[in-house]
Amino acid sequence: MSSLYARHKAVIPDWVALYYRDPLEITHGEGRHVWDSEGRKYLDFFGGILTTMTAHALPEVTKAVSEQAGRIIHSSTLYLNRPMVELAERVAGLSGIPDARVFFTTSGTEANDAALLLATAYTGSNQILAMRNSYHGRSFSTVGITGNRSWSTTSLSPLQTLYVHGGVRTRGPYAGLTDERFVEACVADLEDMLGQTRSGVAALIAEPIQGVGGFTSPPDGLYAAFRRVLDRHGILWISDEVQTGWGRTGDHFWGWQAHGQAGPPDILTFAKGIGNGMSVGGVVARAEVMNCLDANSISTFGGSPITMAAGLANLAYLLEHDLQGNARRVGGLLIERVRAAAAGVEAVREVRGRGLMIGIELTEPGTDRANPDAAGAVLEAAREKGLLIGKGGGHNTSTLRIAPPLSLTVSEAEEGAAILEQALRSL
Image (cartoon, rainbow, N blue to C red; front, side, top):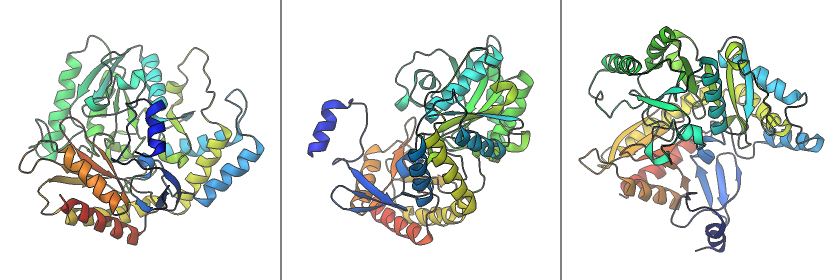
């Protein structure tokens, strides 16, 4: 055991998980690579949990942070804040939500907390619809709407949560249906669920692609079909874009746009990639919903000048260099290579994903039973060969998660896929 690992165990809670049998200390990074404390170089296909969105040590972002730090780091929302207003203007314009207002937080958990506060205050209901296999954060309220047992640390909640089918396409009672019939069945389930409620429901919260749950997703258009039902009942739609936002899926800038036939969500939450490692989250909602709170509220750290400077520089770089297009092109190549690498590996049940958001589900050969030991073995083998990836999965599933920075090059995609092939075949 390294001395740092021993010190970690002495002061950090046991439930703060570490990857690898011999945990890794990352000391610096550049582009799509990071280095550990022993000088080993790794190709990074997880980006600090989908957070290093553009590149490690991106000069434009580090310069913006340095220059802002030289002026003022913190002031709170009690004062006018030019970087916060400028980033809010850009995010509101990109969101697709009409007459949008933006509130910044420090994390995706806090963003989803704020969205739940808005929805329950606006509707006067504490009932929330969530998707099975979902994950929305680690606070008391967001754990209460998380449909993934591995990440739900308590059954206590200030909310009454009802879980709906649809977030997982290839498992569960509707898996054998066509896409059209799958959507019809999930809509019928939603209608039936609403028939069980005592009074009005505040909102449906859904990840367009479930992140922690193993990069699972429904057929395109499911949430548009849901939206038509929700509108009839006066229920808001919250799209949790913490992992799917900013062009990561390649085909769309936001995940909800694959389900946009009935219009944009009422509320959109974001975090992770926008700060490229700085602590930024936020909520976008139409003014009627955002302004419904009738008590004072501020944010001490949300929208701080230094994190807003990072977000502005990072977003500008992403748009100017068409990283969404790069995610579509290089992500399409990468998923083809990963599927080829997984071909014939008995433990691989499915390779799925979109853009630079790819999952490899592992099961015990010949069954649908999760194979966490295999996932751990591949994680270790990939690290030994110089590649960092993630893992996840919900009820009885085990999935490797691949989500590199959006500036990934073709040669890096080829290199990473070759390492993955070796790691998978080592099973």
